[in-house]
Length: 77
Image 1 (cartoon, one colour):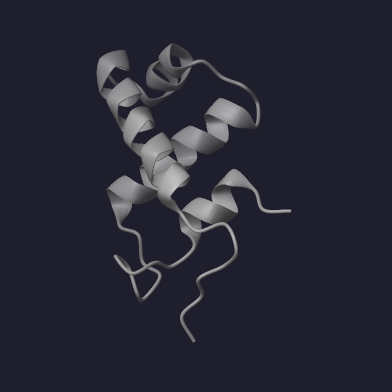
Image 2 (cartoon, rainbow, N blue to C red):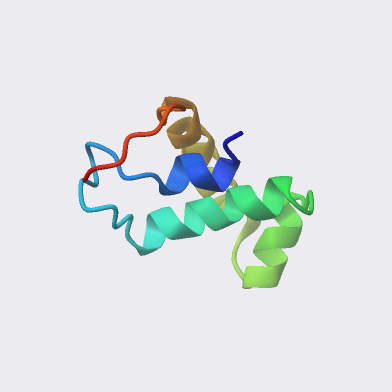
């Protein structure tokens, strides 16, 4: 079974080397915090000392990227 983090961290055509970049890593962390302990977006924003609207936009991008990520594995040798 794949987890949210597995799907988001998998290398893709956009990132053939597997490096996601700082912003993408942050979006993966938002998904992890949102679903593993179940924190609301406003709490994640408070923990990170960021505006809740900004974190919510990042969360929406992360959800879209997650939906588009292949579920079966896309590792580059």
